[in-house]
Amino acid sequence: MSVTTDRQVLKPAKLRPFLAPTRLWRLREELPGQFYGILATASIVIPLLAWTLLSLSGKVEPLFLPGPDQVLQAFVTMFTEKDLLVDVGVSLARVCGGFLLGALVAIPLGLLMGSFKAVQALFEPAIGLIRYMPASAFVPLLILWLGVDEPTKVALIFIGTIFFNTLMVADTARAVPKELINVSYTLGANRRQVFFQVLVPHCLPGIINALRVNMAAAWNLVIVAELVAAQSGLGYQILRAQKFLLTDNIFVGLIVIGLVGLLTDFMLSWLRNTYTAWAN
Image (cartoon, rainbow, N blue to C red; front, side, top):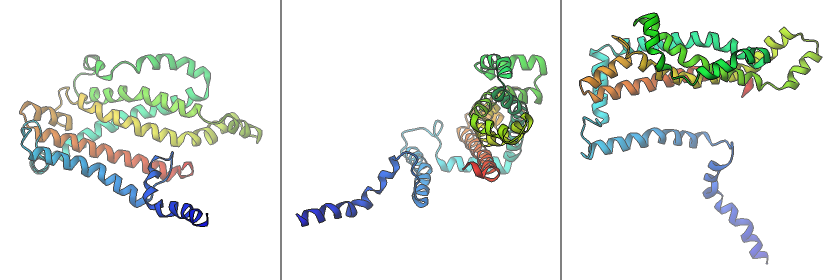
């Protein structure tokens, strides 16, 4: 019996290293930093390797799927000869302009909607209706009202992001515990102090997360915006490459948009982790 008992005790210890990967399936379980880095690297390397093998197999024409080396060469050409950085700057300015203008309206309006039922009743039905209207469907109206220049492109991104930001900020404000507000009143704070010194700081991490989510929509819309009489920008370059069947240039535009969008996401994440570290 003693031998059996010892084996039963030792067996889990011997198998423990092999069972370690089961931590992957535990809810909200932290992973070792090295293992997390391996998985993150694999998420990039595996698709890149599959892309390379598929292009080298000859089963797909380069017109439909250029290889990574062709895309890299096209990137160098666009960077050195076609002012790729200028196009990046133009698209970034349009995205930031429309998105920030929308955020300047959405954040205070969302906070008020989430804090006061009267404001919610006044605005939420209309916003709930308009948010289901595709932003691209407003293009004809925007051209009629604003013409085909920069205001139309910025306005399209504004319309495409403001309503979702507003509703997500309102949900964040509604999630503030009522007990926290009641305790603030008990400690002598007035309504203004509770709003600006308790509710708004508590919502700040959620507001930044909402901006991170909806920034992706802004980058999606910039492509649609640059189809309207644009002479520069990443969307314009993609459309121009499609006309001349330059598939490698299309890949360059898509990858650059993804990288710039990821950079803006990292910046917002840094902002949240730096100024609302208490929320972590």
